[in-house]
Length: 433
Image (cartoon, rainbow, N blue to C red):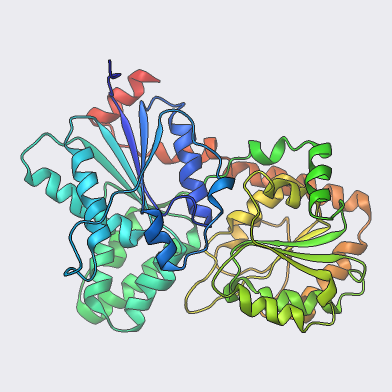
C-alpha cells in the first residue's frame, strides 16, 4: 500500500552532479526537511544529458552521496521535438510541477535561481490554478549569484526592459522572496531602481519591502566530525600531508581569481616548500593549467578535478591555508561564499580572501582580507599566514568555526521556513512536527 502523503517540499534547482554551492544547499535543505515533518521531498532538476551539453562543471556520478529515504530527484524529459529550438526542457519541468501542484498534497515549493527556475514555478502555479483542480502550494524564491550578475543586472545594463521585468515580476509573484545575502538584495534593489527610473515601474520598492535574507545552508556536521586519521589517509592518497599544501577549492574560473593565486603563490617565500592544490572544475580550467605550467612554481602546483563530497572536508582540514581571491567580473560576482563557510567549519589553516560581493557576510572578521586582483597581496598574506604561531592559528580556527555555525543547515532551514505563512499547509505542517 502506498503511504499517504500529507505534506511535500518541492525544490527546483540545478542539482547534483552540478558543481555549485546551491546544489549542495538544496541537498541540505532537503535532508533537514525530511526530519521536520515533510512526508517527501521532490528535487526537480535537469536531465543529465542536458547538463553535460551546457558545459557546466559536473562531479563524477560515482562520487555523489545518496539522498536519505523520502527524497526523490526528478529529471523531467523535454517536451516536443526538433521543431522547437528552445524551451523543451523548461516545458518538461513546468509540466511536472503542474502535476505536483494539482494532486491534492499541500506543498511548499522552493526555487533556487530566478532564471529559469522561479520562472518555471510561476508558470506552473498559473497553469495549476487554470486547471480548476484544488491547488495548495506555498512558493519561496531564492535569488542567488548568477541571478544578479547574469540576468537582472545584465538585462538592466543592456536596456532589455522586457527580460528584466519578466524576472522581477516572477520573483515578486512568489509568496516569499529571499536572497542569499544582503549584498544580493542590495544589487537587486539597485537594478530594479534603474528599471523604475527609466520606465516608471515600482519594482525597487517592492523588492526592498518583500525580499528577506536567507543565507545558504551548509551541513556543518560533515565538517565538524572529521577524524584526524581519516584526513591523513585521504591526504596520503593524493601524496599530501597535513600542512604541506595551500588549497583552492571552488569552481575554477576567472572570477575566482585562480590566476592571481598562481602568481601570488609562486612568489611566496613562506610557501616555497609547499604545494598549491587547485581543486575544482570549470570551462576555464585548461587556461589556468597553462598558466600554472609556465609558472616558476609549476612543479608545485597540482589540479584535482575529481574531489568527492566525502574527500572535500579532509582537504580543507589538512591545508596550511585556504585561498579564495574572488574578484568581480561581468559574468559573476561572489554573492556569498559557501566554500569559505565549509572551510571555516573544517578547521585547518587561515582563510585568505577578498571583500568582493557577499564574502564579508560569509566570513565576518575571521579571515585575512586582501585587495582584489592583487597577486602581491596574496604573496604577503601567505607569508603572514604560514609564519603565524600555531597558537594564533588555533585561535583563528576557533573563531572562524564559531562564526560559521550560524550557517548550519538546521539553523538556516528553521529561519527560512518560519516565513511559511499560516495557511492550510502551515497548520498541517505544524501538526506533524
